[in-house]
Length: 402
Image (cartoon, rainbow, N blue to C red; front, side, top):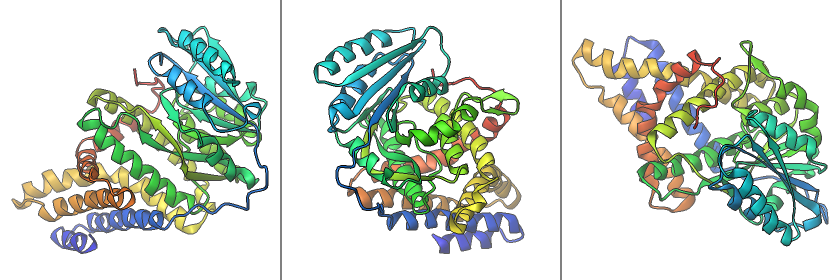
């Protein structure tokens, strides 16, 4: 890959900025995969009988199709029944979500699991729902689960063991795609999810600083969250109340307080991903808005962390901002001026995508790695254009999924 990038640099001689970008993106991507490849969770010695009390928290809106399964999968958790409960919130749903919650509650309580249901008459947003769960819980650890995500029965145990370290405030579980076999798009997303967790979160976890403990399945120390709850709940950016990117924002607040945020690859959950291009585009736009906002905020303090993490973070923030200009230059300006096809750039992009697919194959021995290669190329050529639009629309705080 580095050789190809060097040749690509030679082909754009005279443009130092593009040459530096080409080499920098290669070093950044390779370093992430290299760090992640050697990542192994380092846990403090587990204390005998370490079983902190746990609340599973599930804010939900218009999730009648999945919420019952989400609650019942939690109810099957392999953890002492007197040490965990489930708190679910209906955030002003207009479908049968609330009825499904009560149906699940009836079944779960027959298994000895306590379920508390709250309901907002009108939609107030996921952050308000998460805050209610925090305030309602009397337990030590909070495990937030998306309302269309399904945990394994040992997920709680795999998450809580990281909290033997008192400096750990949050732990991200590993998310697989539940509907991966639905169509071509979901197959590509399943590889993207795997690489995002096993490569990017794993490399950040080496430095105790996972930058986003995902909403699909992440655990938090309640006492740490309580310290930042009010400023997080009232967060504003550019004068507008923040109503998206709640998981990345909460992680940021905890990192700024000096806490550790970790990644637990053994804590498994399965989530439903968008199955149409329209839904995926909406999701990606929302994620890019929160990515830019929270990275901008994190850039003010992340330099205090480990030097390798800091360099990786700033590269990971700056390089995507330059990417649209580089793609335009490679595929439009360069052919127009020289009359040549940017073969080395295309080869470099393909090689980068191949590394993504190979990483997936090495970790899973799954033959679907090719979908990861395709997604990386599609992402570069299509979704990359969403970033400028996301930045322009930062003040638009609509959820934008449904």
